[in-house]
Length: 131
Image 1 (cartoon, rainbow, N blue to C red):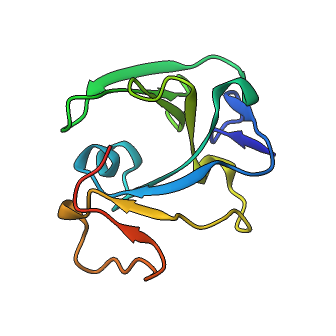
Image 2 (image 1 turned 60 degrees about the horizontal axis):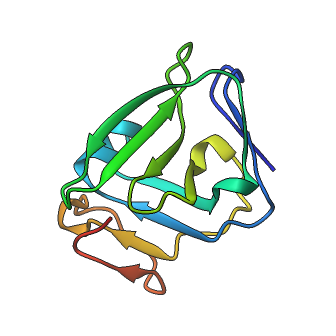
């Protein structure tokens, strides 16, 4: 499986299945994606091969955890991110994978800032806060 930015310069080769897929409604993910929420599929870092050049943006989450987002310096697409509290994992933007058959999220986090018109499936675990 492969993830890529819009222009194809920044890529990630992935195993078939992620460990977990999470929908995040925090304001930072809304701004990162330009959408009402972000969805990341998490993999073990040692199972992902990154190709191309990435720029990064570091921030601290509301829960005081380090978050580093990696994006293409040409087209600006976010392809992956890392979390300081989970250094062995890498989160791949589901939109960069662009596979409609990918497993749906199992967690929905930071729902305190979820847009009122977004309906997550009931079988998803819901959390007011996250990360």
